[in-house]
Structure formats: structure tokens, C-alpha cells
Length: 381
Ligand SMILES: [Zn+2]
Image (cartoon, rainbow, N blue to C red; front, top):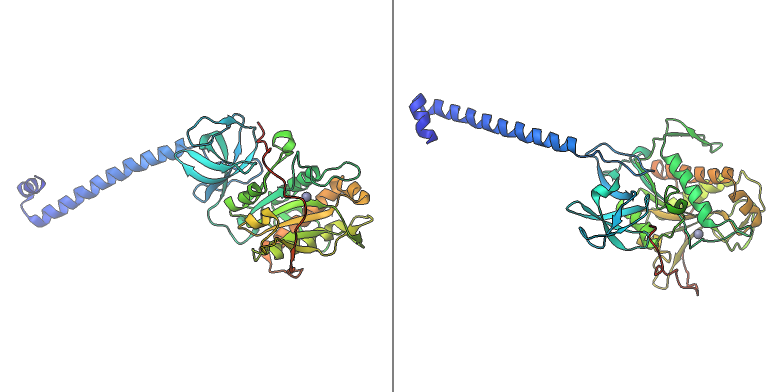
């Protein structure tokens, strides 16, 4: 039909071909304009992605949902599209999958569940990380959480409480651009080191019970994996020292499986110890500042290190079991110094090849007490 019409109209097959091509182009243009309009309308209709309460948002197209933060009324379901149980607001869950508007998450008790994507805040993480602070992703993990209080000081101060405060301070430092005086160690607002692309904690003080609730070790490691963290740092305070020391007995546990973990741990010890050395105390310590504990199979003893696919380390700032140190740990100034030490360590981890403490020899660790069971773990409602 078209061919006959063209021939009737214009006679020459060559002219006909040109006209046919022109019509084809016109039809394609109309389709493109219509499609573009629909797409633009869809984009406008789509709510802009937002980061969690302690994350930083990224421009559209450069990010993906790595974690979610629950809202008032968010429900957690065993399967996508199935009725779920209402959970508390401001819980942070790593995202492991997606299916027609639902996101697969791991809850704080290491259980898989599903949330509706439009029922949570999306924690956007970069698709491609950068090589500077502005392109980096950090997970800060305050150790323990009620009913697991961690070590408790002679004056009653709990690790769970001190750890989350130090973590919040690290998140705050990472969330704005900073200057560092590398002589004094002081960290101030500035322009030299960009805010991290993402800085998220495994539990935050915005959460239920001011963030004092239980987290599984798998959950903690999974958050680091889900966001493909540049580094995962678990914040702790120590107990059971072996002897008196001249300065802070800061130490770190590192992984035997991850090449970058010992360097991360060494930097954390180096910088946190430097920060805390500015305080007066009857310091105590242990035998080594960098420790790699393994089970009978030669694998990482601590689950968070064993399950982490990103560089991870557990930092033990000071001894909460020591009355003199517990008194300091109770103060904001000491916690801020701890946090600034962690921050400087992360800056050096990203921007330098510094390797301040030699990689430790793995040591067998086989305690009598079994690891904590998660059977009675509760997801806050
Ligand atoms: Zn601990």
C-alpha cells in the first residue's frame, strides 16, 4: 500500500525512498517524544530517594538501595506481599534482594524478611565507590545492645551505652567535611576531607530505646556487605586486662581472611591510642594491640569478622572494667577523643598506604562459654 501510494504520488523510486525515510524518521521522533514525556512524568511522579537519618543522599542514577530505615507503621513480612508484623521506627536493615516493589532485608535478629519499598526510607549507597573520603562508604557498629550489655564497669557503666555514643560521634564526624591537625590530632569543621558518601550505623540513638536493642553478628556483618562498605568498624570497650601500662591499652581484633583488615585494625589502634593518651588514668592493657583470633579450623573466631566481605575490625578503645578508665569513658570529652581517633584512622585507611602495626600471627581461641544464642532475640515493635 505504501509503495503504491508513493509511486502514484511522486513517480521516481529514488524520491519515494527519501520520502519514506523522512516519514519513518518523523514517526520515530513522535514515538520518542511521547515516550520521553511519559518517562519524564514517571520520574516526576517517583519520590526522590532519601538516605536514612544518618546517611548522606546521592544524586539519582548514581545510587542503589543498600539498606532501609523503618518508619512509624513499617511492617516486616515473611514473604513479599504477605501481611507482616509492625516494627518500630528507625530500625536499620541491610537489603539483600528486590521483588516487585518489595525489598528483602535481614532484621536485627538475623532473620530474613520483606518490607514494601514505599513503606521505608531508602538508604542510597553509591553504585561505584570513589577513592577519596567523598566516595567512601562506612558502617560503624556499636557493639552489644540490651539485653546484651557487654562488659559492665565497676561503677555500672555498660559497654552497650558507651559504644553507641562513640559510634554516633564517629557518624557525625563522617557526615560533614573536616580538617585534621595531624600534629595535635584535632578534628575540626573544614574543607580538606569530604563528608563520606555514606556513613551508617548498625543501630542509632534515633531507634527504639535510644538504640539500645540486640543485634545479631550476622546482621552487623551483612550491613557492611549490603552497602559494600569501604570499612566496617565495630566499636567496643575492653575488660580482663593482664597488666598495668604506661598509656592506653587500646587494641583491635582483625580478620585472617581479609587482606585489608589488619591494616585497618592497626590504624585504629594507632589513632585511638594517640587520642586517649591525652587523658590521665591508671591505664591497664593486654599482651598485644593487634589480635587475630581463630577457631580450631583456623578461621576467624569472631562472626562479624568471619562473615564480613569488606575490610572490618573490632576496636577496643579503653578498659571499662578499670575504675580509673571507666570514669573517663563516662565523659563526653573522652568519647569524642575516641571518635576522633576512629575518624583519623578511616581517613588514613582511605587516603594512605600507612601500615602502622605488623599483621598479627593468628592465635587459637577456644573459650569454654558458647557464643550468645539469638533464639530469644526480639525485633523492637
Ligand atoms: Zn564488647
